[in-house]
Amino acid sequence: MTRSHTTSGAATERLQALGLSLPAVSDNPHFVNHRSIDSSVHVAGQLPFKDGKLLGTGIVGRDVDLETGRELARHAALNALAVAADAVGGLDHVRIVQMLVFVASTPEFGLQSKVADAASDLLVEVLGENGRHARTAIGVASLPLHTPVEIQMVCTAV
Image (tube, rainbow, N blue to C red; front, side, top):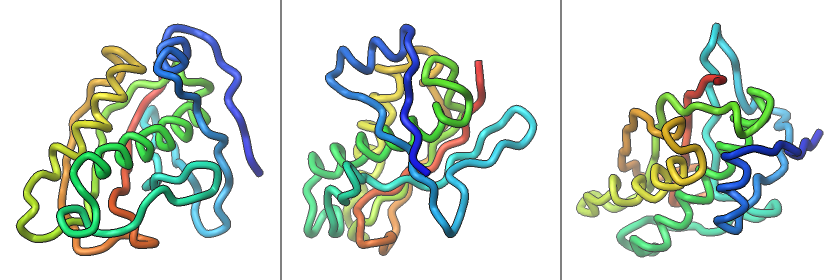
């Protein structure tokens, strides 16, 4: 099942002003895209897919440069936002609590936080104060499908 978002409001307008739109959320046969517990919504790890295509593969610091890693992180965050909006009834109702950014990178890379900053910046650009969040950015040896970035979130409805 695929769902699209038809919300309007301040966050939606800011997203459109950036020339972006939320992608449709597709179900996965192996896991759920989100799980709500009390007021928290846990968003499953999202990869930088666009129109069903993974936008990049490789290891940051070896195959992927910093700027490409940052763009992939922004796109993974956009996909996570789509899942969050689906979970809480629209983009204008999303408040990000925490974001975990996994960066497939070389041991000496050390700039995982710079990759994650691009995703954090997007959340604040779109959601304003509701996009400010606690965050962890970590380097890992490998990620699913050889993607350079995966983003997981915890959010709540406002």
